[in-house]
Image 1 (cartoon, rainbow, N blue to C red):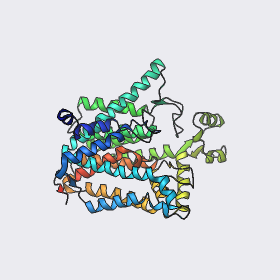
Image 2: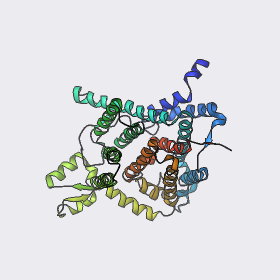
Image 3: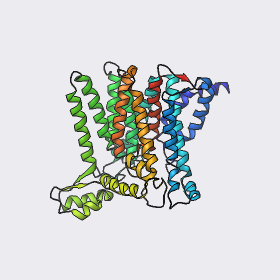
Image 4: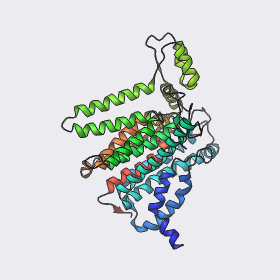
Length: 417
């Protein structure tokens, strides 16, 4: 028993947890293998650390964020169209999931303080290399030997770009979930760069970029922008103009490519309809071929309009994650998800969370710390991804929330009272 306990410790279990995070094939993908492991990790954390558990800086603000976050999943029950009992029974799993995400953040906050920021960055990096390797192997099996697996998909897209191409999905629920996991690893790699990038780090970065490229996820644009902005700041540290130009250009490119569709003629429209039926929105159907610019709002633009209307209609409580108003439960936008599904408390909880993260990062002792610089960059890029993705559903994001809070605590944790 003692030998088992020596192997099964928090350090080992946290590594396995991150490695299994995107193995989502339990209960139609709602649970990952990592979720099954988490109760064991949590129990070992409490047992091993005991009195060494600490509270985050700005703990009062943390409590406010947690209260607003969890409450936002209950308040849609106040919507006059619901019976409270019916709402709670249909949303119980979602509410438990919301609490679980908070516990993930708290757990990795403690782990980062206990084992150090380098440890957390390394396991995030290596989990991405491991998972990316599995996905890339599946793609090579398909391209070389014609072996078809669920790890590579062809029509699992809501974008008009690269529709019909083989795309790496891995065991994730979606292309974007796979892309976000690889993006997280790329960010962790930047944290581990000291003065110059070594050959091994360069190889790891190239490998991860190959993985995210062959997912053809829109997240690959953000990953590229993240690296371009980081290294432009390093190379042109005497001027702010070029880094800012890189950032603004990248943001405008991302917004343009995700919110507009170019349809040249009837033939290109037919091809788009065949390869990606959901990409042919009602706006395209109604205005083609009368639009002289050949530019049309994309599915993401149409979804935002839909969720804005639903949010206004169900204000202030929201319509709930599982609801009877609409079959729309995936807005492909964190901002509109919080507004339409969770109402005023959903928006406030998200704003408080963003404020908490950036407030902690502005401490004087952290300003020149590479980990903190990259973490700030991660959150800026995550907000961009959040425009067209439901990032609050990703477990990796909550790992980073705990990581962020730990960076602020690093030089002076205070014991829990």
